[in-house]
Image: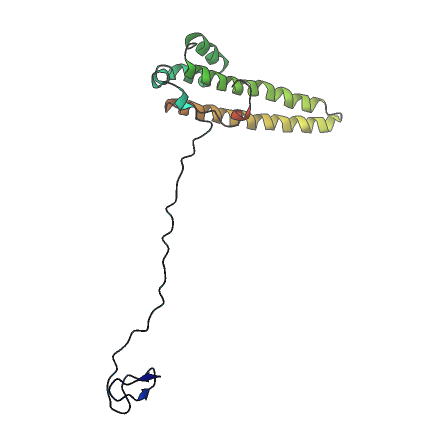
Length: 175
């Protein structure tokens, strides 16, 4: 209940006029509860470095001077590795890519041997042929994957990067 300011009579809270004297009540705003708005904290973004990107470890001049030699290791396989070892032996950038290409070459050599041994040790001849066929298919898939990895590494060199190629980066030899 509210009280009329003119005649002091009790009036309903939602009345717009006093029923006794007719005084109009001003629309009084109900006190609104204060809502404190919290400003969300500004997110902190941290740049996470790629642990497989070693570009910062090499001099820009070394990268520029030895790009072509480094490309050869992925384009020409073992011959490219030998050429890079002979020509770019003083370049840490070329040596990095030689190590990565050697990992790929080791996988290319050992994979068919391991798959063939797995197929040969199978005792049952019919099952052996099946295992041998699956091993040949697995090698074909691996060969295509390694070709894609070489292409990606080649384009990484074109950009002046020194990234460890996928799959073979998990091999911990030739660091």
